[in-house]
Image 1 (spheres, one colour):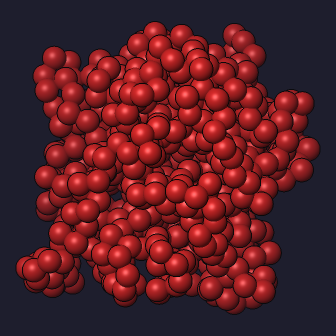
Image 2: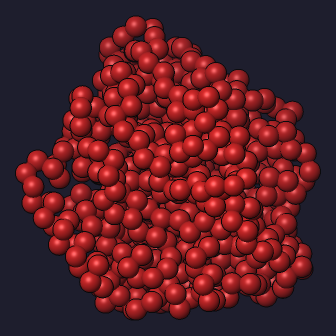
Image 3: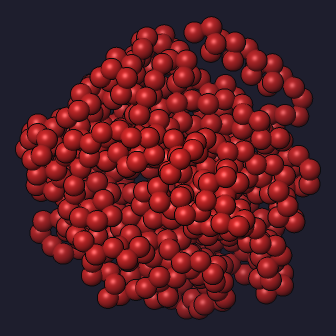
Length: 615
């Protein structure tokens, strides 16, 4: 533990430097300015809520298209824009272009940045090689902004697909610095098959990113960089030795108890932790008062659970860490010994709510495994764990004393065995909800959740690890849940009681991020391309507009020159839309998703457009 103690002392010394830690007071202040949208999640609590009410339940039906902007790139468009003052910043899938648009001048392009030059990313990887190891479409979830770091007044941060973190001057698009997060190695595909799809996360004087690549046996991590020059501040791996994970065996807790020495190593067979996965590519939160950042880790490698007995800690885990030192305060593992690829990367929403009648400083997380968790975000105490789709069947419930899901043998791919096709598992691997972020309205005290309603068959098989090659080891088929044909629902959730308030069925998965507003309107989009506005209290549909391509982007809102605007990217893709995006046709292709969504091609085609509405 000497290295951790040394790290803490060094970082405490850094904190003492005047003007360093509070360098991003601007973000803390302006996250509450409804005229702007200064971070991808809306605020540090990841509410995706706006206090704007010019557009409201009484007039939202009169929305009209104000303008749109083509990115010039096809494939899946996840994430969405930032609005800083009168400038809108928008990004694309691979090659990960960034545009700055002038809202004072008909959305004129101020600057355009492309990290790929001559077909090569900054890391030295070719764009073709990066595409070859992307798991589930060529997506990117957006850029982040920081004020007053380094040269210039502001910085835009891009996490490119080759894992390079790039700092751009917000006014000119000029590169300030860049650093490759994961070494691409050498050879046909490289020693490391890690990729970057997650949005950067700015906290104080640092910017953090995770990594993808569990499907290639990459041992992933969360890394914080100093914003001024791109130097590494700290790195915490998802699994491995205590020093690698930045944990204190006596003080880092799980279910309120110390995790103990070698908590991760003891949960893997031999050295399997070295290719353990635990990707981090979702959405993140920070509680400034508790001074903790929160994120989730993904599935263990390989998808064949038979060959990796044990809890595989700390994959599938909610982590709470100090942003200055990286040292973990608490963990909670949602799916020990994951047998279904239920990544735990979905957003962490921080809300002060009543939980079973008592006010709590809560963290709410809608996991891929079909359970919605409400936790005390300070202590890591588990408060609520309930299914947010009634069809979830792989576990009966979560034991509130141990925190463990009670697995049903009938749907256990390990219990059924290798080379056995386990059928009827709900949800499918893409989860009751994938990364598409939910919204929370402090006005209604309701969480609005885009969901999938999909089940699967899952057959694990033996696969050997080869650096740079796919390391999956399972064949999947997906299809609608029993009792209907709808592949998605949009639900309202009471996180204090753990129950669905109402649910709207959709023919295809709801793969867009939700937006709630003080105008008592909630926005979401569908894979066919419908942008919808509904009543925040009842779920009644108030407005529908068919965009040019399926929507997997996240809704945003801002005000410019006295007028409120609402926007979303359309451009079908992502895991659910990978068949259409990549031209795949076999039912088991796209890691099993193609069969469930093969009818999608009858409703939409590829695109890449920012759609903007106003009254």
